[in-house]
Length: 318
Image (cartoon, rainbow, N blue to C red):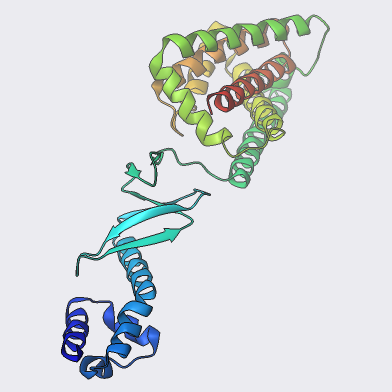
């Protein structure tokens, strides 16, 4: 019995890479374990503390796999049971933890029948989205105001420059409400039809909305809708459109520029085409009303309608 205990202890020490760490964890010198022949000592080390050695092996194996970049954390609240195969001594170490690990962004089975799947869309935090929206909108609005003021000063001094502030003003009349309502209904209806009939546009729109709107609170949608709507219209329809001339050519040029600048952040060329068509609607609404208030209100309300519908459909699907 003494010989069997000694041989088993020596075999575990020679084959398992975790024996040295386990002996230090238990406060036992490896030389003592190597030459001890007491069955009580072996039973206490290899049986009484077997759970600690097993858990320590699983933790070290997980750390090693994490360093190699094979696993990454995902945000799961319920504890999952991950089976880790010991590649040295063939021992199955079961590690109970509060997180799951996903290999290379693909699915890996967890306990039960559920699967874990990572997404390729990078979702920034709520603070990052709001800061980016505020800074970008502020810059575009400042450029629009600067162009209007410079053109006004240059035209007053007799330079061959159109006065942007004279052609497109901030005036508002009651019949403008009908124009705003018509623009919102037209743009929202066309968006709904394109989402159902144009898969590439639906995929592009879904990626953009998921990246920007996922982390936001419900009241944040007002900020995300109105800040870009006001600043973009101030720049494109309130400054560039009258600067190029209030005509159909200028409307198409500004709308095309508006569409190109909507590329990126998961949005493909289909989204740029859509933004160009929307720019045409806002451009004609601006020339018909001679007011920058009409495209601002239309743009902001369309953003809000699109965001609320996406939020509602996402919650319903979940």
